[in-house]
Length: 78
Image 1: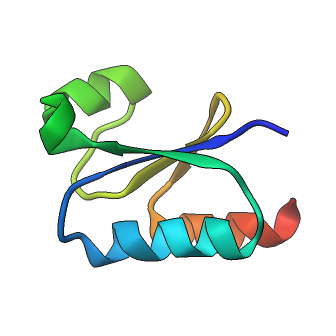
Image 2: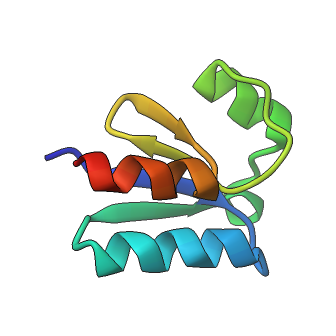
């Protein structure tokens, strides 16, 4: 199964909850700290092909999931 990618920032509660949700469900993920990587919301929007207003932004393999609430809805379908 493809791994998840979480784009987030330090101090983001929803980013933390997304990581915990994936760990609890036994899914592998990569966390990308946007500040550490020098990624702006505009950079991420270009990378994902979607306008970005909030973090986290979550991708499963090549499939765009969205934020934490979308992840919660998506996980039971796996």
